[in-house]
Image (cartoon, rainbow, N blue to C red; front, side, top):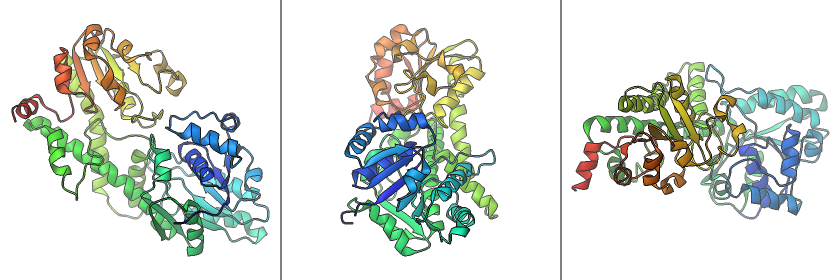
Amino acid sequence: MGTADPARVAVVGCGHVGLVMAAGLAELGHDVHGIDRDEGLVEALQAGVVRLEEPDLPELVQKGVASGHLCFTSSYPKAIEAAQFVFLAVDTPQTLAGAADLRNIRSATRSIANALNGVNPIIINKSTSPIGTGETIESILELALERKHHLPRIAANPEFLRQGRAVHDFFNPDRIVVGARVEDDARSVANLYAGLPGEVILTDLRTAEMIKYVANSFLATRISFINEIARLCEQIGVDVERVVEGISLDPRVGRHFFHPGIGYGGSCLPKDVAALRYIGETFGVATPVLSAVQEVNTAQRTGAVRRLRARLGTLEGKAIGVWGLTFKAGTEDTRESPAMDVVGLLRNEGAHVQLFDPSVSDHAERLPENLRTHLRTTPLEAAIGADALAILTDWPQFCDVPLHEVRGVMRGNVVFDGRNLLSRDAVEAAGLAYIGVGRTATAHRRRRTD
C-alpha cells in the first residue's frame, strides 16, 4: 500500500476502539472528527486528556489535536456535514440470550442519517456485531434517506486491536479486512490505511463480519483447550508449561493464546463466542465446540476458588489478598474479567478480600461501589494479614514484589498463582506454599531432576 490521500473522516464512539481509530487515522494525515454523546469525555479529549489505560494513546491523541487533524464533538451534523467516511465504533454488549445488543448501533445510525445533508459518505461498521449487521445498517439508512434519494454505501471493517497493544496493532496490522457490496467502496476504505503493513482482504459484508467472529472464537478455543489440558496435567503429575513448550515448537501449533490461567475475559472474547453460538442457533446449526469453550472458561473461575478452599479448609472468615482485577495486564478494563468473577465467588463463600490492581487502585470509581472499600494502594498492603494470596491478572510488576516481604506480612502462607506468573522456586524459597494452574508439585520435582 502506498501513501494515503488525506480524507475527511468521522468516528462515532470514542471508547477503546473508536479513540484508537480516530487518533491513528489522524496520524496517517486524515482530518478526523471523533463523535461521542458524553460531553464531559469530549471536553477531556479535546484538551488531550485520555482516561483509558492504553500505552502511547494519550501522546497520539495530544499530537493529533495539536496538529489540527483530530478534534472531538458531540454534534453529529458538525462532524458529518463534510465527511467522506463515517466509522461506527460503538459498544455492542451481550444480551441475556447471548446475542449482541445492537441498540447503540441502531441509535448511532439514525443519528448519522439525520445529520446527512446532501452528502453520501461510506458508512463503515467497526463495531463487533452479528453477521448481517451491515444489512441492518443499510436498511435503517434506506428508510431514513428515502426522501433524499440517497443509496447508502455500507462497509464492514472489523477491528483486530488488542487492549494494551492497540496503538501498536493499529500501525502494525497483520491484515486489513473490508467488506462491502461494491468493491470500489471496499477499496476506498482500505486506502485509508495506505502505508501500513498487512495483507488487504476485500470481500462482501457478511464474510468480513464472519472473519471477526471466527478469529476471536478460535482464540478463545485455544485458551479453553490449554486450560482443560492444565486440569488434566494437575491430576496426572505433569507440568503443563513443559507440555506447552514441547507442542508450541510445532509451527502448526505455536504458542499464542496457550497460557493456562483462570480463563479469558474482556469486552470481546466472551461476547463474541456467545454471539457466534447465538447465530448458529438462529440458523439451526449446532455449535458444541463453542459450548465446551464457554463451559471450560467458567470452570476455571470456580476451580480457582475450589483449590483455595481445599487448601484453607473453608473460606468463611478467611482474608484473601487479591492481586489484579482487570481482565488482563495493560488495561483498566474489568468488563467480563475472570478476576472479578473469582472475587465475587470468594465473597459469596464468606471470604474477606483485600484488592490491589495497578490501574484500578487509584481509580476506585472503576469498581462497583460495594468493592471500593476493599481496595488497597500497594500489593503488600493487600497481603497484610491474608490467609492466602490470589494472583488473578498477569501484571508483570507483580514479579518484582519481594516475596520475603509478602511472607512477612501474611498470616497464612498460601499463594494461588492464577496466571502462572511467578517462579515456584522463588515462592517456596520465601516460605510460601505455591498453587499454580497445571503446575503440580510432582511435575515440578521431576523437572528439577532433568
